[in-house]
Amino acid sequence: MTILQITSLLIVLAGAFGAINYLFLKLPSSIGILVVALFASFGLLGIDLIWPALGVADQVRGFVTGIDFSDALLEGMLGLLLFAGALHVKISDLRAEWLLVFLMATIGVGLSTVIIGVGFSWLTGMPLLVALVFGALVSPTDPVAVLGVLREANLPKSLETQIAGESLFNDGVGYVVFLVLVGIAFPSGEHHGDSGLLGAGTLFLREALGGAMLGLVLGWLTFRVMRLIDDYSLEVLLTLGLAFGGYELAVWLHISAPIMAVCAGLLIGDVGAKYGMSAETRQYVDGFWKLIDEILNAVLFLMIGFEVFAIAFGADILTTGAMAIALALIGRLAAVAIPVLMLRPFRDFSRGVIPIMTWGGLKGGISVALALSLPEGEWKPLILTATYMIVIFSIIVQGLTVARLANRMGREPDLV
Image 1 (tube, one colour):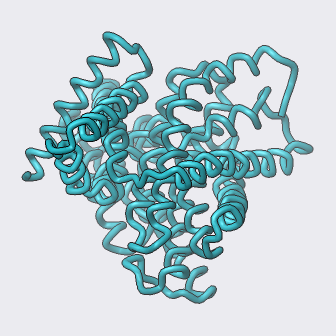
Image 2 (cartoon, rainbow, N blue to C red):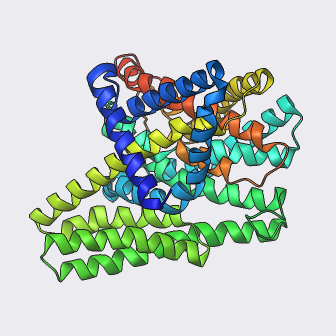
Image 3 (cartoon, rainbow, N blue to C red):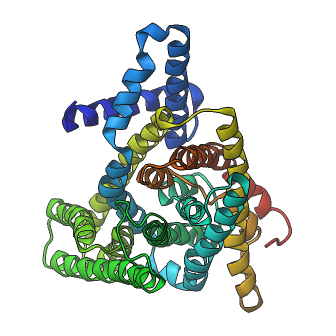
């Protein structure tokens, strides 16, 4: 199938599954599409078990693996999704929470990676470096999933900023940590890089700082151009060019494209919206990127649902995946609790910040894409299955209950 045919089919299915969810399940849009896609996937697998001669599952598996989910997300959709998410986080709000966001996106990601990696190595006998790669790819929260849940939850502004800001930045940092660890654990794999500690540190600084600097520079240049223009259609086009072109330029320069997209989106969404756009342009830019966000979210969650065809099934693997879910929650708890407790003597926090941010740290398509991008080897099927189970549990179970948890915590005495 051509790219246009694949894209058309995905959009048709996303629309159809979204309608089924709206009419019958009535779940939040993205989660509902994922659930319907899972039902459809398991239904096809069931048909294949009953009538194996039809070969339905093999045909669908061939289609799913032919899409290359990892490239589609990491080198296509992710830049637009991160840019759209960052547009709606104000720098002024983020400035008040910057230290917590910074600690959670650095120390928190590091702690979670180590805890999950060491625990997974102990559970499975996997080499520690390989297990740390698994810890790195499931540690970042997915801003796509998190920001979607925030729309449903009625959270205090400070807590909403903490969750949104942390999810945007720890995604980029986690991706860089993943690249560094893959370069050490799989030195001959496609994720090339210097496997020494000095080389790993240099790679981290170049990716993270380079991505931030590029995003701010490109965002500022785009803002300066937008100040000279009063044409909403052209200004929408400029923001689209910034998201697409900036992301691809960062990939070409071998610096963090996710961090670039976040920094550019923050600058355009705050400074650009205040000083570079008319009221009419702000309305169109905001509406355009909300629509892009919703459409890509729908397609992404549909693709996650169908990735079940890429998963290895087996009693031992599924049991390990279930234990990995608990391990991921423990790692997330440490990633939230340690930074909060470090800052607790110096500032106040919203009620229930630790349980809400722990349970609200959803994993998503980025983790699945990173797992799929790993070099082939004996441990990849286990890593992929455990990652997929963590993501499905996170989106469906945590995603459907975090708003209720936040509302309940908000009525109880102060908790951290």
